[in-house]
Image 1 (tube, helix red, strand yellow):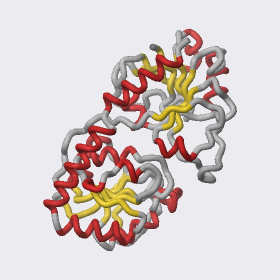
Image 2: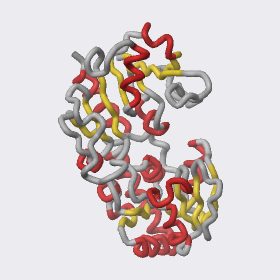
Image 3: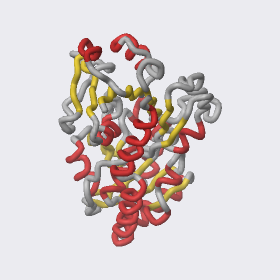
Length: 314
C-alpha cells in the first residue's frame, strides 16, 4: 500500500516504517512541524519525503493520522476527506491530556475513522464515543542485548523535563538520586538543576542505548504519559527497571524485571538493592528483555498494523 503518514513521534515512526508498505512523509522546507519528512532519520528506502504540493499526484491507499489538525491538512493537500474519500486510521499516542476518564476524544463523534490506541490503558481512559477502536501495542526495533550495568548509576530519559515537570516526574529525580546518582538524557534540559542529577543531553539512538546500558538501572518516573518507548527500549537492552506504577506500566513491567510501585520510597529502596546486588540486576534485566521481546516485538506490531490497514480498505 501507499500510506500517507506524518513524522510525529520518531521512535514509533521508526518501527512503523519497517513494514513492507510505501510511507509517504509530507515535507515542507524549514522543518515545519506539519512537514518534517524523514528529518534525517536512518529509515528504509520505502519511507519517502514528498513535497506537499506533490501529494495530489500520489495514489494514496490509507491516511495514517496522528493529530486532529491532520484531518484538515489531508483535505487541503489531497482534496480528499479522510474516512470519506480515502480510508483513514487515527493513531492515539497519548493518555487524555486533561481529565482522566471523562475527556472526549476529538474523533469520538465519527464512526468512519478507526481509532488505534497504543495501549489498553489509553483506550480505557479516553471517551471514544462512537469511534471504532483497536489497540496495537508498541513494537520496538530490537537494539540487542547490551547491558553491562558497570556504572552504579541510574539512567532516565525525559524530553523537556523542566517544562513538563510533574507530568513526567522530574520532581521525583532527587528522591532516586538519594539512592543512586542519576544521569538524565533527553532534549530540553536547559535550566535543570537538581541535586544528584547529571544532565547529559540528547544523544543519537545508538550512542544513547550504549550509554544507558552501562548504567545499573533504568528509571521511569512519569506520572501521566502513555507508555514510554524509552522504557521498552531499556528493557530490550536488558536493563532492570524501577518504574512508577502509572498508566500502562503496571502491565508492561513484570515483577521479575524490576521494581514497580506508586510508593517512591519503595522504588528508591529497589534501586539501592540493585546497586548492592549486581547479579540480581543482571537477572532482572534478562527477564525484562525476555518479556519485552515477547510482548513488544517488532514482528507482532507490523502484523497487527497490516491487519488493520487491510481492514479499512474498501
